[in-house]
Length: 544
Image (cartoon, rainbow, N blue to C red; front, side, top):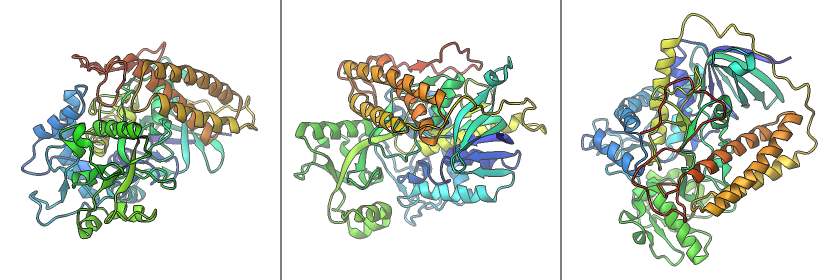
């Protein structure tokens, strides 16, 4: 018998966006937060650099907006940029009120004496941080608050399989009613029923072979929303972080952008700097430019990596500002106070996602998407460094306010939802197929849909993903679900969305660079994909 949980609000994801929304609503409603692994396992906890916000008297909302629009290469939505940036200082204050221990500097010019750093694409020092472990500080603080909050239940080691909508109940009124969730620890499916469902599952960078993200970044929320009938936009814009530690045992350790903000230099194996050949801003150019420059030099010289060198700074300065990077690199025999760090680009951030308005609402009533899962229009064709955590907090609080306005004394919907049916499936004795498809998918996405693309590469990728989707669908229909199968199914859907979006964009812009169309069109248009036979029910217009 399927275990059933009933709540007013179901939050799928335990990163900054999900926990912020849950904390805002917990005094007013019964909340469930489900986490794929432990509560700290998501991308938020791994963020090193910080959060961009207008906090200094020498800075301004206009300046932050201009920097965001410039990085976004003409595709940012002006209203989303203004909405986010104008709410930035209030969002930081909310985090401070929760107890996030941001780094202070007695010599700072802002009124609270917080140390602000400068990152690529920013015209001012506006990135507030907690040393070089900002994400950890934010995550641990919000988790502690969530554990103490009333009306808030935390469910770990659970991965959502699919959203429950009117299609499952035969109801004529389109709406989201909950989700089927796989309990990893107990190997069974549970039903979570709720009046409001929030997708805060992060991005889809695990679709690539090399990524700075954790294993759970498999695009679950985007894939589930697509299957439920939501439009997605700009999935072709995948940000590759320029500097991921290159070491066989390092897996996915990101070297924070803040190193370059504080003067770190990118060099070739012979010690020569090269960024001056690509952009006048050199190491402080936006991430897409730096990533392509590194990719170009690696291919030109046939080298495995380039190097990031901050050893010209004092050891005291490095240890004070970058203790996490120093400690982690030291475990691999690299002392960043004395020697350069080997780095390569890696898939880092999904700029596209589920289309939402400034209240986080999707095309399906009662379904919201916030954080990296969503497409708000903020990031355009390339996300400005440290705007991501800001977007999480701003839109989480906005969505929470909208949901709060919709709450009544009534509990979850009185509709009887169908239990999970696995009567027609069996245990798999061929899990090797999952592992094989997983590796094939991530390899061809890296080779054909990576930093530099061509029509031929995209055609090859589309052919392969079509075959994989068919194989995975057949496997899913005949065997009991597992965590690996759920993630593979979602990754294949997201890969298809990325490829289809890339094929539609016949220009090079921001993070999408193709040798067949190297020029940028004069008119900037979003790439919007709509599920077949789906009538959208809310007036959310992503067009310019």
